[in-house]
Image (cartoon, rainbow, N blue to C red; front, side):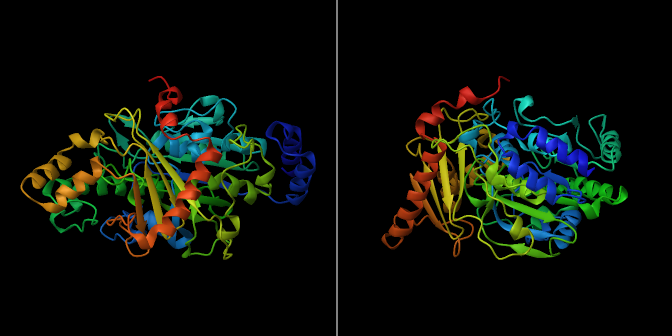
Length: 481
């Protein structure tokens, strides 16, 4: 194994922009040591606070909770975008969405952008994509195999056959490390999987950013049931690693993706929309039951995995230069954090949302976000317009409208802030974790706002993000559907 691994690296070193000297050091450092297998399991539209291990004991997630007990929770992990395609492609490329080209939903990266399956293939790994893709073009994501999602039977499709195919892939070559990218469709709407009857709608505790109506409570029972179904899928993967005796030599990541399909979550840059329930398990390396509370992002995952394997991520070229001509990753390795060291990975986390091209979306409504972990600043570039999307047609949103028309002040405020937002929003996450009070105009916060605004401007410049102009070109980045 070591000989093959070393030769593969040296042969393609020039193609990924790493010096032969650096490669030689990596190969020597891995003599006699098999790199860890890698599993990334990503959910679909789940808010970070809707898991048992994140404090919501009303939602049944025993397998995900078990994973957290055996590993580390990364409690300030942020998404790079508020919808699926930009988020997933930032995860797999180590580049923020505007820079890699996939910044609206249903989009594709620029032709020269490299991705995690490409890097891992160059390091001797074989890889498989299981379930949802939502990345493009296919040639930029060279997985060796692709199969449907695992799980129970649904809509006449025997998804358990895919579990057998996944087991065959894992067992195929015991001497070659593997990468499993498992992308569930749960708990994405229409929330029709799992057993909603186990949840008592009237007894649920709603997060404070939601308007309390019978309709939203009923919707949450179905959403929570689908999270429980997702948890079963996670359990199948964990059990399969045990069955094939790979659990001890595999690093497992679980990510909740972005927020659920309710107002002030998905499609927004509030924490319920972009903060991630992130868990990492690596037996013998990551301390069970531990936490890491400094800022981390999806773009940091690729550099971290390369660092874990023994490569220096700083030496890699991604295929897409930023506005300054640098072809390195936007992300940074958090390997030391996983190993228990008290380190600071980054000063700021950034995120964006491009509404142009979303279902029933506006012609343009762009937002950008920066946080230092304690404070968050959101710039609503098209604050003079109204935001809209498919959620306005939902039964539970219409119940909010009725409640507002009947005189409920909180319902009116929630609807107003969903549709019309000020140019700047500033939140003190230490005292207002649900982001209920915008304090951007308070004089005592002027210095904090100015500092975050400068950091946001510098990030956008580095990304080549021109704000309105970038938003208006979003359709050019979308895949023909």
